[in-house]
Length: 324
Ligand code: SAM
Ligand code: SF4
Image (cartoon, rainbow, N blue to C red; front, side, top):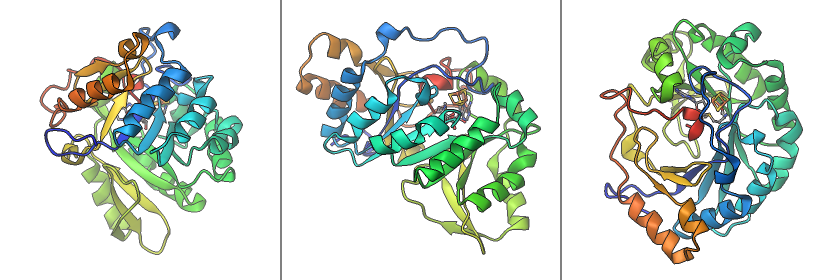
């Protein structure tokens, strides 16, 4: 089993299958970003399967496919199918911007993906374009396709930015209520150049919570696989809303996850730079036992917490490199 020096059990792996994306959300992947990984350095499907099997052997039960935008990786369906079939993997989920879900929701569900997180920051076409550089309509169609394919529950993630979309919280609540979606609000994080430029729009979610409590009765709620979010049910409705507050109230003490980049770097914390390159081990003929030992020793270095508040300029890589 994988435990770090602070007694945290690591059972959750976020796997970035690409650092590329068909969107350019300004807080994540600025248009000026050019330093993408080259395809020769990406883990192949076989390498992904072998590596995730090592994590599964060490007790990882839940894998989330992320990116960049995972649906731009051509082999995604095959990757999903192989991970879902690994012994020990109990859950395979996906984070996506939904722009290509109309085409892929059914095949991904068949491949073994069971749960979806979808980013949606605005229901206003113009504002959506300003935030993402892309079109809203395919995303709305993608959400409907995912529901039709039975990929539920779906959690919508909305990054809250003062002066940009904080006025849309109530309309997003209506949208989710009507469709049986879970809604989660996220504070901006100073990760990469995009994250830093979003900092000027940072808004502590306590403000949104206080505003919503004037309008709705919020009952604390539990949710499976809840991770870092605090959940509430809106009284007299089925809607559950979540607050993810990495800045104002960090949740590092209960962190149960690590991340692997498209090139096979094992990152120990989203808000720190320490990492271990696993691809050279795989390509240079390491045994399964060697790889597992390397993972073990890296986890022992997992930092206690991020330092977004103290050193907000520390993380240079864009959020799209590790997928949040
Ligand atoms: N492309 C997929 C998507 O958008 O869901 C997966 C990758 S994306 C990097 C994962 C999550 O990170 C999204 O919910 C996105 O909104 C969030 N994210 C990206 N940059 C962020 C930032 N600077 N602060 C807070 N959340 C951020
Ligand atoms: Fe792409 Fe997701 Fe980043 Fe937006 S948040 S640029 S959709 S990776």
